Image (tube, rainbow, N blue to C red; front, side, top):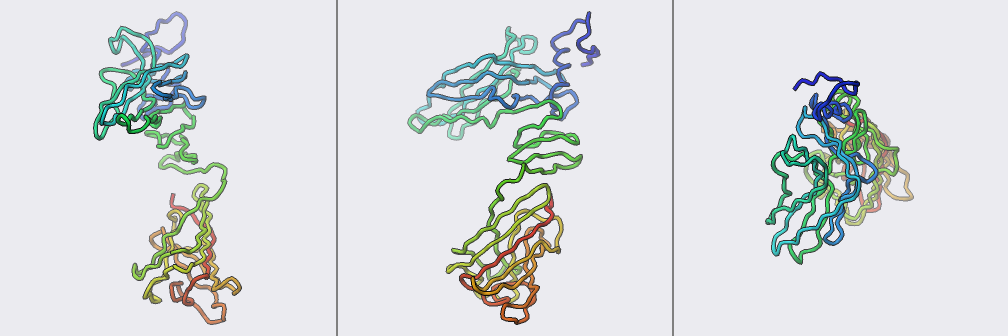
Length: 354
């Protein structure tokens, strides 16, 4: 296993294994000291898979392919596009086919070949088909799966979700899932979020904020009884999350079919879910405006995080619009009996749990 030869020194002879081990340094680790995350180089559309009729096309591109941890990494290149012909559909069953990039290394697989190319592998028709796996000692990475319905059951579809990507150490990996055994400062990009590892967990950094995200609060009661429902209420609730800072607002105009909690009492205090769990309970996370109607003055209240960290209750902080003292948490009968056309607005910010 030892490989004491430093690379690129005049007068030394190197085996393929020795050079591949030297290239370990050029790739992102896979969670092991001598392993490399195999994958396609992101960007440029390299090694993409498409289907037109029965013709499968794999475009030119480059990738890093690993056989086993400690065996180094192959730099594989398809210099031009390559084609294959889709196997005809089964009469009654679906199947899933696989397209993959293979490195042929005679010293490892005894194939008699030393090259890299794209391979199309037909799956087995079944009622619940799965993608096939290349056998033996094949050195490869998957590029795409092709789901082929039975004859007359529709067109085959290509999915590149199986394609792995890799970048140089320190690079930002485009991936829906976190890389294995991350190091402090490692980064990946998923679903619009830049994720950075702080040494113990992943911190979320959003892209430059654009439009806020809409959500519909879950409306319940503290007792779990006499539950309300929005019906045809007009709901405009949005939030933006940057790191662990959440900005949000709720704008709700209750409708003619809104149910405020049939048979509810003052004990059935309302709770409304917040966009993401909060870091701390019992703190104020915003100001509420309670309006009996469009032309009526509003009462004010305070939104406070409940102990479950996922909901807020709203506490009165001013008298009702008619001057009557109002205290406690709002519910279907407090600070007044609610009805169609009345409004509830809440806006604020808080620290998210993660």
